[in-house]
Image (cartoon, rainbow, N blue to C red; front, side, top):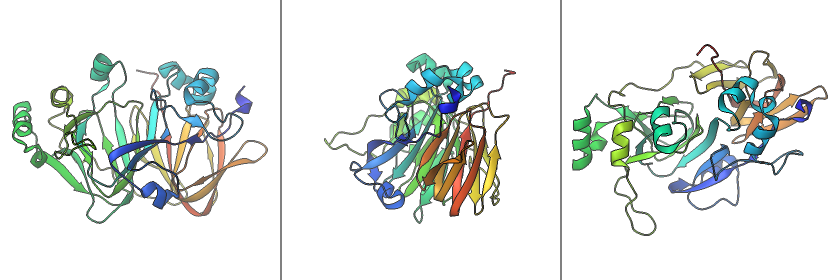
Length: 333
């Protein structure tokens, strides 16, 4: 069974958002998208938004079907033992033409208790940022629950938030409980736990197409918030040519970045996990297998490498920048 698996591409699942824009067309050369397209889900097993294969003989099969059939060969034995038939990550691009709502996500315990699903730990990689773009990550000072509730009631909560200027290549880690928001003019890649639970705290009094104020989740958010989350979650890293540089390493996912201007080889004898590659700049050919089969990635494309494939060769077309995502299971816990 394992020798028939190959690098898998998926048809993006597009999401219309009130704040969505058109950068997927401009920067990724995609066409026929819905208006106000704010999100492109690249790899997803979230119910009602499950990814479908777009290449090879498995074209038309959904990700959840593949996990059920190929199990550890696809996702890695340790990953399958931990998560079963549910693919544990969601990878998406977000295009914010306007400010997103200020929000927070619950941790695993609260999410399982309330929604029977995992919580949401996530990371952001800024692919594009217009001049004076910003993000919100955490509070600007520690506050108490009572101070927060008062700020929500009197409409001053926005003054309590930590606003950060951003540029292309910036990386942020956003744990559960951390208040956050993506600012207008930002296109970013988000890697997260496979969960779509969001509590909206503040939305600039925006109205939907029907003239209604968008729903807030004030009471739900109070129990999810970490009121001491004030630290700058921007991750420091030093790019290196033609070798991986770690930018995030947590229990839910590991993310490395590659800046390539020459061919390289990658071996994964100790990684018992699928690997996802996302091209965020340039283009690259990835070769695999004994017969030199290959798959091409251009900017904005994503590919899932099954766990049974342990050797890859990368051939940038001039230059390329890739993010590499996988899961490390700690069997000691």
